[in-house]
Amino acid sequence: VISGDVHHGEVLVAGAGKLLEVTSSGLTHSCDDPFYGSLCESVLKTWPEHRYQKRIKNNYYIGKNFGSIEIDWADKKDIDSGGGETTMKINVHDVLGKTVLTTGSLPLPAFESHFTPKMISMARGPVDGHMLPTVIRIWGAIFLIVVGVGLRKTLFHLAFNEVTKRGMEAKEKEKKKKE
Image (cartoon, rainbow, N blue to C red):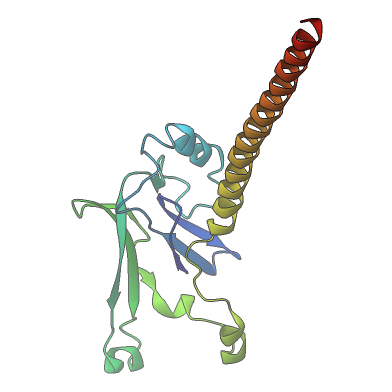
């Protein structure tokens, strides 16, 4: 699985090592931006169990990054003779192109899909903007609060002016009665 939109890079495994996920995200944003501060790295350090290379101290990368896949296709005759094997290597690179995370060379057939074409067709496609409904709700709430406060102030001023106007009229009537 190749994924992104988490603003950091990491290599994950699941299913007894049969499912490999490489996450590379963040040429424009990253986990070390001021918005996240030290929170992102603290979270990544706290839960490292699902990562592919547990023996490596920093098996994630929080800077701006991009990913690449290298496939070394073995010749058919080499495979038939038992010699060659098609391998892949998935890397995460920093903005200068230096490899900061890698799966190392892995046999490609070990990660071939066990999904049927029907199962693949039922999978959801990539969804961009997954935070959009939340953002819309937040902005909607802010809008309602601002409008509510504005209406409250306006209604208060109208009511205050009306009460003041009636009070002034009553004083004028009383003044005229006394004269």
